Length: 134
Image 1 (cartoon, helix red, strand yellow):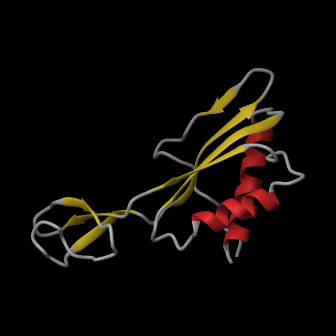
Image 2: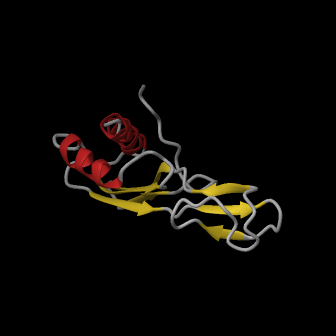
């Protein structure tokens, strides 16, 4: 269950962001998880509930956005979702496709409580890269 190490790393990253922004508490953490990430959202949620206890993230709202698996066909350029892991273009049936989303496990947004409510802006590219602990 590598979700524990991922969540442990995520919590460290969030606490670091909170400290860098003079936060007093973390109100909300948003992550996105794709089906090809190898990360199970239910296990991430459970790991968060256990590991956040006693940290600055305890009691914060933890929001998981599940990202659909999407691809682009190299032959007909169609963009489509792959609902059942069938890696074939839905338009022309080509197998020459490129995955465009669904590999993600990343921190999207952190809302912290400070002297005034603060919402840490997203960096360009839409999210923070999660740090992995081997």
